[in-house]
Length: 216
Image (cartoon, rainbow, N blue to C red; front, side, top):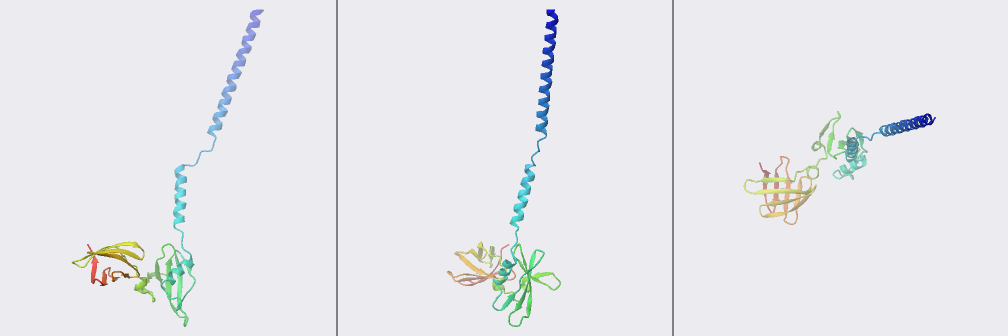
């Protein structure tokens, strides 16, 4: 009888132990499922690329039509001429310039809304060099490259830009800073005038004279 009772007790204990093992395995299985089912984070490199693209777009922000019109009015006499509000056309704002006295059209000008570069706007919708515009004045409109080394055959002229309208120069032992707009710059302290010619040469007048060509 005792042996029978002992057998029954041992059997019951085995059943309890087996049930506990199965319960632990199920819990472990559920825990594993909960971890594997968590959402996977987006690839960090993709997020970085997206952020870089957004920053690139922000840097490429365009100027407004009002800003572009103001750029034109820097070199067009608005007391004599009217500049219409710009009409967007692709990357450009197109303006019509008219004479205030009689309303006659002088021509159309296109301004790149990203770079500020100016062009003539032809009747067929094509762009031309701004130097072909009726009111073009090289003294204020020309884009001069005040940079590099130049020579007149015996002397060397070196230019180092400081900003859009000024540069440092060295002509043998003479040095200074010149400022200006368009194709003309002046060093008032040394009495020297620089004129940037259409062929890329620089003509000096005043304290020093000569025609300097880009050094090869």
